[in-house]
Amino acid sequence: MLIGKPQDVLSSEITSQDLYRDRRRFIAALGGFIGSAFIPQSSKVNGSGANLGPIQPSPLSTQETATSLSNATRYNNFYEFGLDKEDPAIQAWRLKTRPWTINISGECLKPQTLGIEELLKIAPLEERIYRMRCVEGWSMVIPWVGFPIKALLDRVQPKSTARYIGFFSKADPKAMPGLDNPVLDWPYLEGLRLDEAQHPLAILAVGMYGQILPNQNGAPIRLVVPWKYGFKGGKSIVEIRLLRDQPWTSWSKATPDEYGFYANVNPNVDHPRWSQRNELRIGEMARRKTLLFNGYADQVGSMYTQMDLTRNF
Ligand code: MTE
Image (cartoon, rainbow, N blue to C red; front, side, top):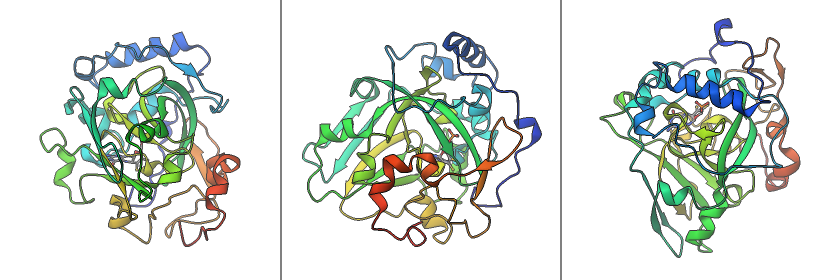
């Protein structure tokens, strides 16, 4: 993402859409996928096929057609497993996602370490079908399964001094060949302002398409913030730190002129090397206009009214 201009999406990536109308059809598709060569061990490691239990539909979901499962799981950014879009699907099986814990510390009254089983019970799991926009100029619609970050924050009780949150991804050199590449400062770190993290649209995802997350999409738990560019969505989170000050996130540290802390989707603020006015929805032929805050302006715009979005990009 950082290294070149946005890659043109190959026509081979634009496959026909699996319509997300019939859940059983999708689950059947996922079963077939898990059996494929792309994530050969995740079925053992994740206990895939294990389902997440009851999942409630959410009124916050878009009605738009979901991206095909195949595109969502084979066209990924997860630099810990390599820089090419296909690398995560090929390499990410190496990551062991059980047992897994998240340590939550910093400016909170009840710091704690929670296992993935406890995290799955923080709040009822919901399906959130969200538009996702990558800073590179492509977009997808993903049916995530997760819970609001706020539910977890309520558990640890932020102090009045907590203004920002840092989300640290796993950095395991044995499982992640990409860590040898100093393209980013590892571990991958992303951050939000506290009010952003508490917004009802901001979730921690533990699944997609009705099943547990595939490794290449950030198993066992990842950040999803649909009004921001995709790089804000740190994958395979192991630590959450409540902070007084704005953290230096991995991308903003690597190239501060190109990737800001806020990273709100904004067609009016170009990336220094390319326009952000439109996007290619994976699975479609024609580009479509990019919407302010990725189409979530009514819900999130009030958090930024006092800010100059060209400076706070
Ligand atoms: N998280 C980690 N740990 N490492 C990464 O390289 N890439 C980010 C984000 N989260 C990345 C990450 C980028 S650039 C994008 S666009 C999204 O993950 C892609 O998520 P997806 O592969 O599920 O579409």
